[in-house]
Image (tube, rainbow, N blue to C red; front, side, top):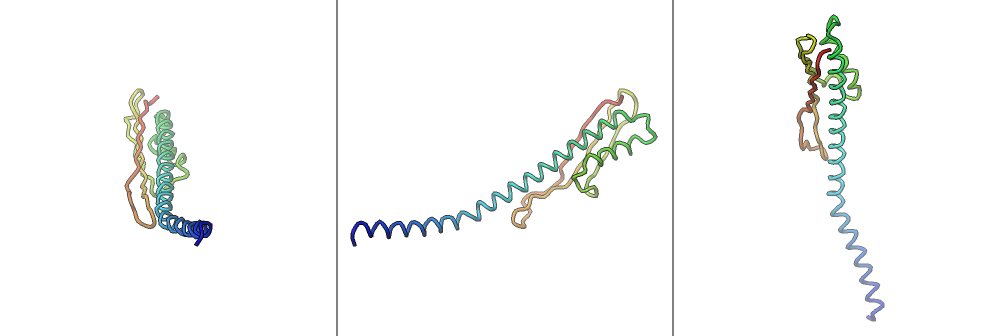
Amino acid sequence: MNARKRRIVGRERERGQALVEFALVLPLLATMLFATLQIGVAFLHYLALTDAVRAGARTGSTSRLMPDPVQATVASVRVAAVNLDQDELAVSVSSPWQRGADVTVTASYPYAIEVLGLVVKSGRLTSTTTERVE
């Protein structure tokens, strides 16, 4: 076999090798991609939860003269958390509702990071905000 034929045969073997390497690495890359997407969704839910709690604390700080300031605060959190499942959202409010006192709003929301049908991590995202009652 001359040198030119050996180079052609060598290239054909390398093409097969690259295909095998790609087939071996593809599941790992796909798993990493799906895990990254799941973490991104959990982070998006955390940002929505944090924003909703902040909005609720702001409403709570200005609603001491309302007939039911706790319900107004919880409603504000739920309105701000429009992207979250309302049945899964747990909200608590605590305050003596006196001027200068603190109102603390806490909310939690479940999360689960699933990769290829396997739950890798799960729990509850929690956010708390405290503001002074006006």
